[in-house]
Image 1 (cartoon, rainbow, N blue to C red):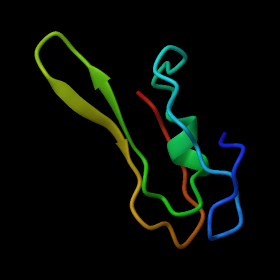
Image 2: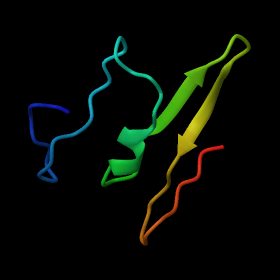
Image 3: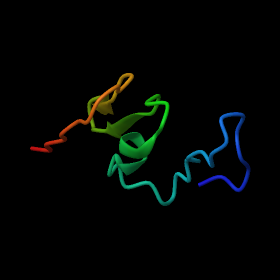
Image 4: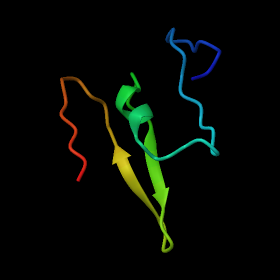
Length: 63
């Protein structure tokens, strides 16, 4: 998480490429729901999680 606080009053997620495992936890906890997580395959980048504006409780199932 950033050491700075953004205009909405929270610490935002910062990508540290050496540490990213593609777990999608940042996308799940993002209050603005604007994070898209990609995993690189040998063929191309494909989105793993796209979480649009969430207005209610959600269930996440990873298969």
